[in-house]
Length: 222
Ligand code: AMP
Image 1 (cartoon, rainbow, N blue to C red):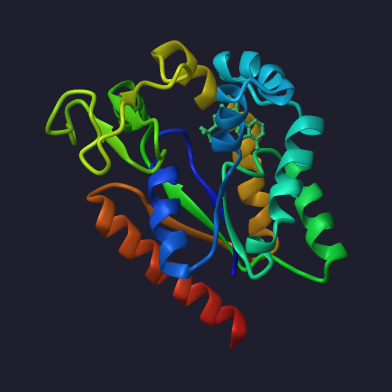
Image 2 (cartoon, rainbow, N blue to C red; image 1 turned 180 degrees about the vertical axis):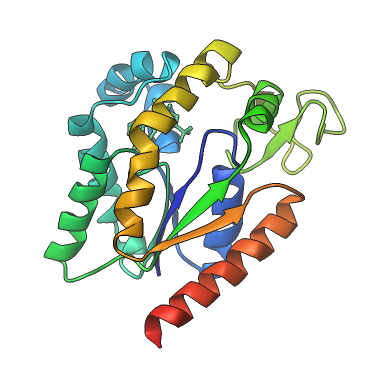
């Protein structure tokens, strides 16, 4: 299966992507994680991306599309993948379509995670992420770790992302509305969009997502 996950910052894309990818036995490909890995490894690509990320802006397409393409060409992605955070604008969506078409492939579904804006800001401001695994996510109020700043799952250090400050979150939301939301219409035109609510317990959202994906891909086959 080839799936794209969309939703505003704080919708829980990373968390859901990790569970869904495991359930569907496909790799979880997050361009945000790829950029953060490049930053922590001190690469030239990381250096180029960091200023945009800290400002809540999109990293230019020339950098992003090449990086995403390279990752999708790895052998583990030959049988499918779950994209989290890519594409993030219409030209990236067009580039992805062209990339897939040249291999005789198509997307199976675009899962749109819906969450009200005030909830997004609350979720992000208290978010703490594990340095070992970005799908180990906590919240200082909603799901605090047993020991402050220590991951319950693997014992790793928890940290707050540099771009999770209130000011940057507002900018990221604006970028989401102006640049990323239009891809939902773009994919709606291809009949690929499935929208679910991202509110409630993580496990409930995963279940909702699996149900919706099952229905939509079944529908596509009928
Ligand atoms: P994320 O982890 O998906 O929230 O992404 C964090 C930041 O990485 C974004 O705010 C952007 O600055 C950058 N980024 C991630 N994916 C993309 C993309 N597809 N296009 C451009 N910038 C991206």
